[in-house]
Every structure is written in structure tokens, then in C-alpha cells.
Length: 448
Image 1 (cartoon, rainbow, N blue to C red):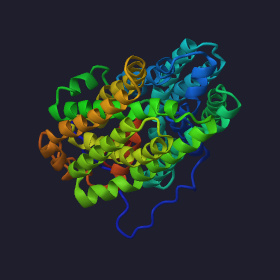
Image 2 (image 1 turned 180 degrees about the horizontal axis):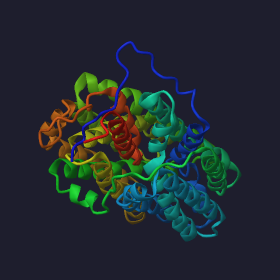
Image 3 (image 1 turned 45 degrees about the vertical axis):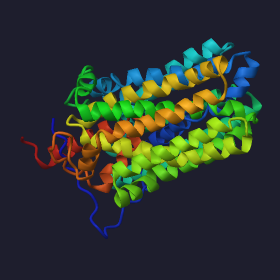
């Protein structure tokens, strides 16, 4: 289906809309976005504490990532179908309510199995929330599309950076603190959303549950998805297992991953677009993945050297921020299907790798040694780069605004629109952009 865009964008020299002059509904959803994005690194500082206090092995504790991400991956196949039938507000509220309940239950759990199970429910809620959060911000924000994207990216950066820090601060009191903290913050966001967000109309176009799976028959999208699976294996091996050999307190781990999150946010929002303009998507990704592999190889060689491990983990934020943005952006351009479908298909494949990697790392350490999982992660990062190189012409064409079938994607070279794809790393931007574009096109061309 066509991915043409009818969105108007600010011209050169035009004053960009202020992100601060917004309705209460926008701030309510943006606040919820910050808390949601915090969840990415929130549990890192408390992993060792959970392991010690619940008498669980590191591999058992890493299941907190596995249950969360695998459920998120599977849910990506259905969340757009759900939101396209019941509307954005109901989907948003359902997601927020699930997060409130399951985060609180995770904090109240008395066993590692309980936490793992409740994290799965949290993952479902997060998938529903993220699938519609940007759509709501775009439709409700004043100042148009660009102002909404600025606000969303701000929430993204604050959430990723502050999640580990909040986890460390609350984790100093108890490992239960971060779970209860998320539940309380999301409850505030839920109440604000219910009262301040106007009812949203049901979309006129429904997304098929099978559409994402059918989309994987396109070679370019499948190649990008499998490459992202290997990359996410490397990424979540580091994120899910690196806290254990550091042997730091919760607050110390919080500051380490706060530094990591700052670099992820900076290079996702600012660094990646600059590098893409300067060197192109393909070359930038090859170098970023290679450097990430070297970074992981350093960890594999010196996994018990605390200074080396801390520096390597923080530096990894650079490569992760670049890769997350450019791969997601490329997928949205090269795929010859609508962006919500491409996003769901891509997310399903890549998060499977992210979900399985931390648990596998724990098992590899138990059966071999601490060097093995990080060495494998370095290898999967290299493999991701090799796989991407098989789609080199497709990536080059994407920089020119062409999908894998050689059709021009209108608006693909417009920075304001592409900026929104940063959010799609978490499943939200694609559907939001298409919903917004359909509404704008109907306004300007009601009879088609």
C-alpha cells in the first residue's frame, strides 16, 4: 500500500513551534511516555539485589527482561489491530491500567517466578500504551506535527536517561521500590489521561493481525529484522547481564546506566541524523555495529575489571543510540507496506532476540564462564553488520527515499517526519504518523 505523505512541514527559516505551549492532555500523555521509557533501564540497578534477596541465580533474574520483551514482541503483532478498532484513548488507558496493576504486583511478589510473570503483564500494557502514545500527542498537540515530535523526543530522552537513576535511587531502599514507583507514577498519568484527554474517534482503517507476518515475505524488511534480532541479542546481553559482574550498589549501578542512557538519547536524537547526512545510513551502521562489537569484545576479555566494564557499558550508549535510530528509520522507508505493519513485523522479529539474550547469557555463565556470553554478543553484532551489507543497495536507495521495490516514498527525506521514527524504536511512531497523515489528507482532499 502507498506510504505517501500529505503532512506539511516548516520551511527553512520558519520558526519552529514551541513544545511548551500545549494542552493538559498532551502533558499527561508525555509524562506517561517518560515513565514508560524509564522502564527500559529501570530494573538494571536492582538485578543483583533481587538475585541476592530472593536467592535466585542471575539467569533466573534475567527472565525479567525475557518475559517483558518476548510478550512485547508478540503483542506488537496485535496492538495496532486493537488500536485501529477501539480507538487511541481506550487503547492508551488499557495499557496504562495494565502497567499500574502489574508493576505493583511485581513489587509485591515474594518469588522470582512471580516477578517474571508480572513483568510479562507489564510488557503487554507497555505495548498497548506505546502503540498509541505518539498518535495521541500528535493529534492533541498545538503547533502541529513538528512540535509534537519535539515533545515526544524530549520524553524519550528523559525517560531512557532517568530510568536507571530512578531505579538506583529507589532500589537503595528496597528492590521493590522501582516497581512501586512506576505503578504510582503511571497511576497519576492514568488519572490525568482519563480526565484531560478528549475521546478519540475510532480509526476508519483497520489493521489485520496477519498483516505483519505477511510483510516479512519482503526481502528487505526480513533482512533488516533478522539483522536487528542479532543486534538486539548483543544489546540486551550487555543491558541484562553486565550489572552482575560490576558488583556495585543499586545507586552506583543507577549512575552507570544513567550515563549510558544519556549517550543513547543524545546520539539517537542528534548524532544519528548528523552522521546519516554526512556518511549515509549504510556506512554509518556498518561502523557503529563494528565499534559496538569491539566494545563488547573488550567486555568479553576483561569482564571482571570494574573500570573497563563501566567505561565500556557507558560508551555502548553511543553505538546503541545510532543504530536504534537509523535501522528503524530505514525499515520505515524500505518496506513497501504501510508503516504500522512494517513496525509491527520488524518489532516482532528483533525483540525476540532481545528477550532471549539475557537468559542465555546467564545460562552460558553457569555452564562455561563470564567471557562467553559477551564474546557471543560481539559476534552477533558483527553478524548483524554482515547481514545488513547484503541489503546495501536497499539501504542506499532508502537514503534517496526509495522503498525496496523502487518506489519513491514521498516525504522520506523530510527531517521532521523522520525524527518521529526515533520513537518507533518502541513501536509508536509508525501508526501515529499514518493516522495523522490520513486525517490531514481527508481535510485537504475529502473526496478520493
